[in-house]
Length: 320
Image (cartoon, rainbow, N blue to C red; front, side):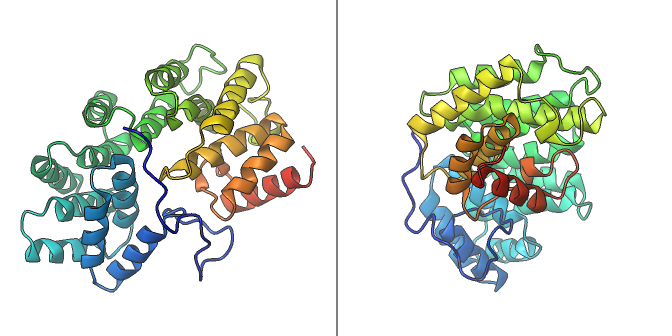
């Protein structure tokens, strides 16, 4: 599947949100509007949004996942299903919202799993219910179940952006005390996924994500310094090759319309800043604008907004 077209209104600053504040919706103004309507009980706006999204699987996953994080979503999704029993869109929204509640310890995981299976049965081609299960089991489940669910998602959408990021994060946690192993399996997986994807796929950034997720794990285990900029994790020959390839890809192929491109830009800005490439980092910070993401700025255990702002100030000030 080719990247989705630019959605009208994406990229405009949204009123009422402080510059630099975290918002999982990123720059999707249609999603922000539907989320605000849902907060008021107007689930019909979400029905229209998801119907309009159609089988753009990356956009659908992004929108459903963001809506699912709101505390009121379960109640309004149930109202939707009372009005429209058997709605595939209502069912996937309820399932994803129950997964978020289960991850917060406010719902039984078994009930969330059952809701995901119900949603999957209503829309067999949709990878989104399987992504919701993957989100759940990435935290709660055994590795063989995580791999199985990733395969279910990939079978339906081979280049699924969010699923690949989840898989990289889980694989990076293998052998946490192994140290700087250049042959660690997370690197193999990320390179394999990038090579399997089309040339213009944002999965080209995945090796950078893998390198960063591995730093998170090593730093938490005391195998790397807690300051990523001064850790040296991004300055080896292999790391520099990964970063250069990803930055060159961005220069040639960046797609304004991909719903999660700002996730990639934050990982790439973080990596180039930590590597000491101030000019490249500055270009990426300009593209990020008012849309930082908590990860990777929170790695390994940092206040993410403070870390993001400090890095942006140094990069834009020409200091590395």
